[in-house]
Length: 335
Image 1 (cartoon, rainbow, N blue to C red):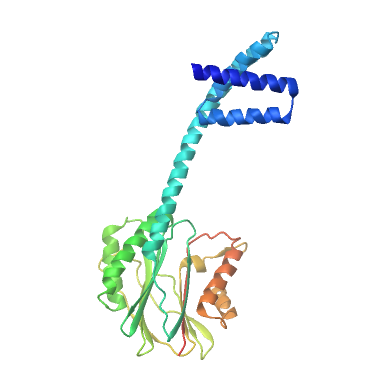
Image 2: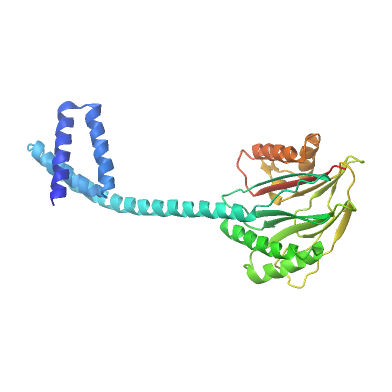
């Protein structure tokens, strides 16, 4: 009660001061009072009541009709106050959820971190940017004696469910890579893991390749992943990477075909997610030729600068708003 009396006395003092002076400073005191009221969770209708009581004291001759109008205002503010309280509650929950998602995104980034190999034989460039806070794309490099493996995967979907699937794939990959098996074996085992552990409505595409430094040969297999490109330097021509295979998680018994490709000096392997090829401009989706044209425009640059420049170009095409996760890997044969 004493607290309510103090509020009423303070409000009376401020209102009297404003009526007498009509200054900006007096109005500012009203703003400060509102912040205090919010801090003490005073509902809007209670402030109307305080105003009415104080007004009767300061202006006892005020017409009854004006006083009666406050009854209407009170009814309005009761509904508004309830809606405002709900809004504040939901806003608090939203901020809490946003904070939790940001923490989860940082954890995911740490979990999925992979070192890009620094090898004399290959110049490697990588860029992977999520469309939302969490990434539904995944890539991984691993070095073994005389070989290097590269994987790129994409969950059909976005957001937290996709990110959880990618984290599962990462841990399954870590255990399988120790076996140093060929790409078809890796995909067939991953397929069984996915089929057992993810929702029937979610699927994962994946490309897995292994490069042998002794033979300059890349052996690879694909599970329905966006086809990459092979740039043949001697012909100055881009070819689609020949690959086919069912997406992970559909058929437990599926077998994956394996392909081989010899690389020569300045040849390139380009791997990507569909967030690259499905870049959308005002005229519609770009075609695959737009990707190879963009790469050709930057052929004179190191691989990392190529992927970064292409990302900037494609981001600009989309009005600086990605519609899907964007992952691009370029491996250029040096010697």
